[in-house]
Every structure is written in structure tokens, then in C-alpha cells.
Image 1: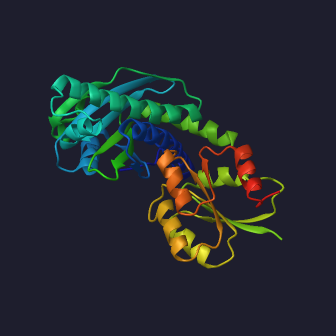
Image 2: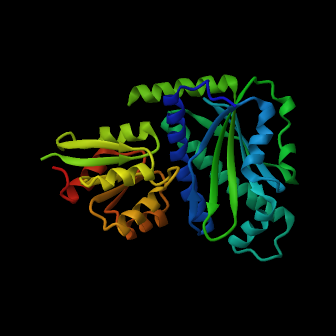
Image 3: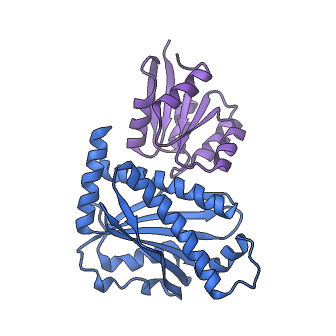
Length: 203
Length: 122
């Protein structure tokens, strides 16, 4: 586990810029759910792809997860993954005021909507500060009630290392939690690092 | 006489940005803390006039700092400076005794207005 691609100043800046995006995402999702969202300090790691499943498992533990992926492109290219504990998906429907009659398709729609709000606000907030133009693909369900270790096929990632940015959203009064992970391949880490340097130089 | 301000944030960059946003005409001595535990230790030295307090921090977060300050007889002005822009977060910090909430990234002009409104800076 290493963050050696970033100096301490760059890592600190990325964490704070992510923190600002996270705050916007937290406020958006709090408005949607009508609940107070507890935020924690974002976590920044640079990992070999083979270590990503373990990093995901550290966040959610052994429970099965449902996950939504959303690609982003433009000045920065990568992937955002929103991970929900499987039990939390039903809770989400409940929070939104739906009763048990919500069918699978509607429940999936709800997950995609919440993920879209989180990713758009969090990454959009980050991009805005470093003046990066970014577009998002439509969110798609990548796994439902799956083992966290099987979420990503890391053998297909040809990047020697990846940036792993973890943002956690928890509700104070409920057990509901979800986690946003932003993944960038190595060439994009360098692009992001340059953008952070320009941002720091402008201060 | 110079005011003593304590800037509390886990990010060095965020502290730097806040310090640069303070009104140039304000005569201040700046101290810094990188989490709530350090903030309380600095506060207990006794001469902090204004604390700029982040909410999302490791060790001890800003909400916990406000609670501790209140338990110890809040004796400084607290301006919360945070990216947690939920209306509920802003209400909570005011209930806990903060005089104002300034959202990140900090807008120097808005911060100046807040400080002048409370008569803490010229």
C-alpha cells in the first residue's frame, strides 16, 4: 500500500478537495432521504489493482453488497463505484417512503438514482475546484447481493496502480450506509496530480 | 491588541486557505490545530479569542469540540468552517454555540462580513 505518487501536500489537497465534493454529495442525499448524513474523512490510497478487493472489503466487511458503477470521462477518466450493504437496499426504499410492494425493477431504479446523485455531486464538486470538465456515463447495476471480493475483475485492469478514494455516508438514526469509491488508473493519477499542482499554485 | 485565533482543520491546505481569507486589516496571532483533541488542548491554554472550526476531522470532530467547549464554559467565539453544508449541520452547530457557519471553499468576502457583523474584525 503506497501513496508515494503523491507528495504530502498533494495528498492533503486531494483529501480536502474530495471533502468539499463529499459535503455537497452529503447535502444532496440528505435532502433526498430527509435524514442527517454523517460524513467522515475521505481516505486516499494508491494501490496495486490486486489489492483493491481487500480495500473494498475493509469498508463493508464480510456482508454481501449491491453496487452501482458509473464511468466518468473528459479531463479525468475513471470509474466511480457506489457500494451498498445488501440489507440497506430495502432500507433505502423504506426511507423513501415506499412500502413492500416496490418491485425489483423499481428498487434498482432507486439505487441508480441515489448513486447518480452521490457521484454527480461528489465528483462534480471535486472537478469544479480543479477546473476539470467531466462527463458521466449512465449509472448501471454491477452486482446484486454479491461477495465484495467479486465486484471488480481486477485481473482486467492493466494499470500498475490505481488511485482509490473512499467516501462514506452513514445515517445517524438508521443503519443505512453507502460508500463511494473513485478509481483512477495510473495515467489519470498523473493528470489529476498536475491539476492539483495547478490548483495549489493558484492559492 | 492582537486577537488570538485558532484555526482547526485536519487539512494543512484548508488551514492555509482560511488564514489567507482573514481580513488583511485584522491584527491577529494565528495558531493552528489539526484535530479536535489538539484544538481543545490549545483552547485550554486560555487566550483563544476566535476559533475557526472544521467539522469533519479524525480523532475528535467539530461537533464534539463544540460539545466540549460548552461543557467547559465556552469562552471564545466559534466560527464553523465546513464542507458539510447540510442545513441540519448548520442548525446543530448554532445550537451548540457557534456564532456562524461558513461553507468551504471559503469566500474571503463572506467571511469578512461574518467577522464584521460580530464586531470581531474591522
